[in-house]
Length: 113
Length: 399
Image (cartoon, rainbow over all chains, first blue to last red; front, top):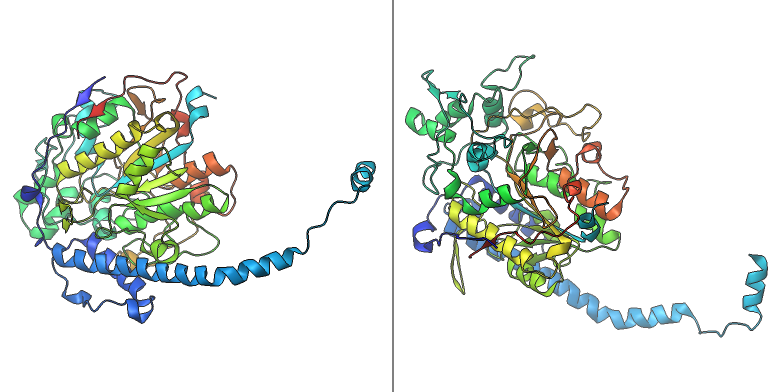
């Protein structure tokens, strides 16, 4: 089996946190800003996106809003879990009592088919 | 049905960023003439009228700075060379002119013609030569990332030709929601919380059900618990983590190409070393060309296969509306599976990003009515998994 060598990269030589934000990250920031506005206020960041100029600044905002979305979903899941016991009780009640099949039931069905 | 196709249970798509076919794989025409790459006679005029030929002088980083323009008007110039007449035809003659517009520097503008030598990209070129490389996989739109990625997720961009926020319109659902709704499993794996996803609207609505991160992808491969369909996003940014420095691996200019090579290798190795290797097909594809030269003219879409949306003249920035009736520039695409014949070159067929939901839908769901005519007409690719005997000669990468 052939093993292909993949050159190792020195992160120091490739990284540039001061690189100007590219169009893709700018767009991601705008999309996340739109998402942030739809979250409960307690999950909002206090980051002013128009001041973001570098990739290093961009990632701080991207991480903050992504974590906020995670937090908001986790809260919602916890709320749903709290409500679940009552829902489960209601669901069981909806099913009604378990009944044993009548002895003649099977034969009747067969006769119809 | 081939034995290989009978074994297929998982499809994984890795979508990289902003590189054209000729830029990444054009060198392979010298290795295999069936690959539609760089050949003698190709050129673009610069703004002095001199012809600039493609040269194998591409650098891993620091060369395409500023980021080449790939918004709708710039791509229109790249494809049509500045011809705006009614009867124009694509000639792929405007790449140098377009890049010149950003810095007014003739010498710098010529770098848009540079491509990588085969030995600079050991991962991508090996995969292309070992598995199935597509001669005709095009971006869905002659425009930037977000609208092109939308076609991979929804089979449409809902009328967008740019980077704007959009919201999904009924009756169209993402491929993930279609899969889950039919009892299948599907996930988008983004790199980490700091890189996040380009599917922000989906994240807002469906986190965590449809989302996980790259470490989870590696874990799911190792444990044999991949979803039926997986979409993997690279790292979009240089950033620090608790484990150290993470270099952007998306290959978006001016991010480092070698970091992307290592990332592609890591995804391939994870799949290959998984117990699911015999049951998995991995597609590596780029979202769009990023303003970088390619010589193949994008085709028109069939009039019967449009997605039903029109971008306004204001949105295109061209003074003309766009009916999503032609494709964007060609991008690298490689289908990987131990059931794909070595050295397959897919020619004479047209693929685009709507081919992704089209393939996943056809394979897992069969018929599905609530999708665009564009997606319904898109070519699908699992037929390339055509071997009856599992290959034992697939390469490994030492990452």
